[in-house]
Amino acid sequence: MLIKNGQLRGDEVIAEFERLTRDAAAVQRETLRRILSENADVEYLRGRGLDGRTDPDSFRSCVPLVTHEDLEPYIGRIADGNTSSPLLTAKLVTSISLSSGTTQGKRKFLPFNDELFKSAMLVYRTSFAFRNRAFPVEDGKTLQFVYASKDFTTQGGLTATTATTHLYRSKEFKPTTGDVQLQPTSPNEVVFGPDFDESLYCHLLCGIRFNNQVQTVSATFAHNLVLAFQAFERLWPELCEDIRRGAPSPARVATPAVRQAVEALLRAPNPALADEVARTCAGVKLSNWQGLIPTLLPNAKYVHTIVTGSMEHYVKKLRHYAGGLPLVAADYGASEGMIAPNVEPDVPPEAATFAVLPTSAYFEFIPLKLGDGNPVRSDECYSEAQPIGLTDVAVGEYYEVVMTTFTGLYRYRLGDMVMVTGFYNSTPKLKFVCRRNLMLSINIDKNGEQDIQLAVDGAVKNLVTKKLEVVDYTSYADMSSDPGHYVVFWELNNEANDAVLQSCCDELDRGFADAGYMGSRKTHAIGPLELRVLHKGTFQKVLRHYLSLGFPPNQFKLPRCISRSNFKALRILSGNTVKVFFSTAYN
Ligand code: AMP
Image 1 (cartoon, rainbow, N blue to C red):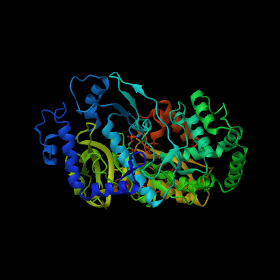
Image 2 (cartoon, rainbow, N blue to C red; image 1 turned 135 degrees about the vertical axis):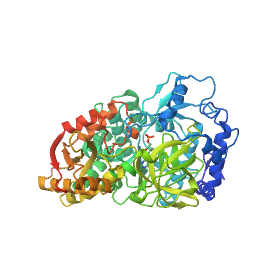
Image 3 (cartoon, rainbow, N blue to C red; image 1 turned 90 degrees about the vertical axis):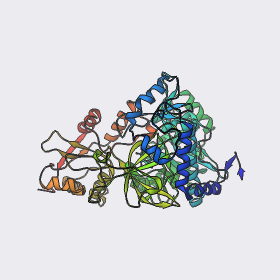
Image 4 (cartoon, helix red, strand yellow; image 1 turned 30 degrees about the vertical axis):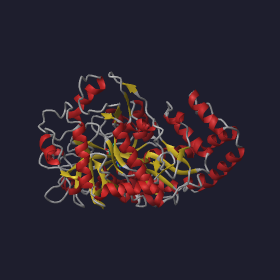
């Protein structure tokens, strides 16, 4: 059964996923039994009355639902080494993961251990096997725009860094099954380099060096792929010069270890490749870089990255770069643990769903519904809603995900809203909807990331014929005016005339279709929506601001709604506003 590197072949990985999802309820009961019996004596579970019981009913009646805040004191003690006996897990916590924090403005500390690593690998391998079946690749290279984050040692001696950085440290973390092996084009020194721009430049250089061998192009989040190819548009003459010379330019690549590693890889001057790439660029530039990826990397089979949730906005731009190459939605997971692989890679990003892997955690789902059938987006429903099991969810319904993990999170509310679109065997397929705490809200209105995206998509239609596009956007609920109103910040690729922008502003206002918003707008309990058009490059400044605070470039997700307490980001946005429009939609 096992071939090459002791790993399962792709068809065996798929067969294993089929087996685990055939009776997902039984697999979930066994997963819970394992978690509870392994950890029966930890401080957190002792005294809760479980008395050795590991069944779902006893678990739910003895252990409360919690948020990260509730577990913070325990995780803090683990990080500080303040533990005479096991607190959350019997097994050693080997390191701490730091969440990206870009959605909540605060980085969470989370336990990381071998079990989490194993389940993450299983999710990645599963989706890789399914991708290979749909879009077969050959042994070769993968161009991955990934960036490890800095780490530090906690008081208790644990390494703390992002979950993805923990994964990158492992030799096993490669898109690989027993029958197909992909090697990253960039050496580890680039992934672990100290400077984001330097690493991005080197990823491009290494990608070009192996242009004919690259089978896939990927990044954790779509945003990073768009950034990379936008950088390519600007930097290709320099990149070609470096290839011609056989060494990276000192102005772009200054860190000695990174330089050395990239130089060793470029090996020798390569004027033929430099000329080929320069010719390619001159051609693609004429069509506004449409199809850049397949032209530059002729053997690439697909582009793979997270394109759902707040990343959906980048799909259009990515499609432009990808030409006819498939865009495959990457899996659903979090620093808390991986949740669900994408096992239907040929489904377009807008419809992508994720089939829950029932061994990665014990899952519960809090139903989110109002009497009129609308999903509840505010927090007040939590106490009433009774969580249900993985296989009890219903198609078309909205839920918040609750996880019990091998890393000691018990009945932990993840804060993500998902919708069930169907079942894969007996495990649910989830569509990611939004983060529950990222809401635009003035009074009774509630609009999440997806609602904001829909409103922007609707308004953008006014721009299409004018060859304008929204490079990026965010929003803010301004309560300083009376009544309060929504502010939407847009950065455009080119200048637009005022009449067009005014109609976009009106369209945005009409685009928020929830009853609370429309009702309040009609009665003027919410003021006219304000559209602020930003200087070109403003969102780069916002990104730099987050990076300067230590937020990880690899997991950065621009919040689609900026909270009032995020003064600095709001100051950057306001300071770079060039035009302001107020909606006339409900006059
Ligand atoms: P973090 O642990 O902070 O890096 O981010 C985890 C969060 O990213 C999840 O809780 C989701 O809100 C979001 N996320 C992860 N995977 C996806 C995905 N495939 N689609 C949309 N959002 C995702």
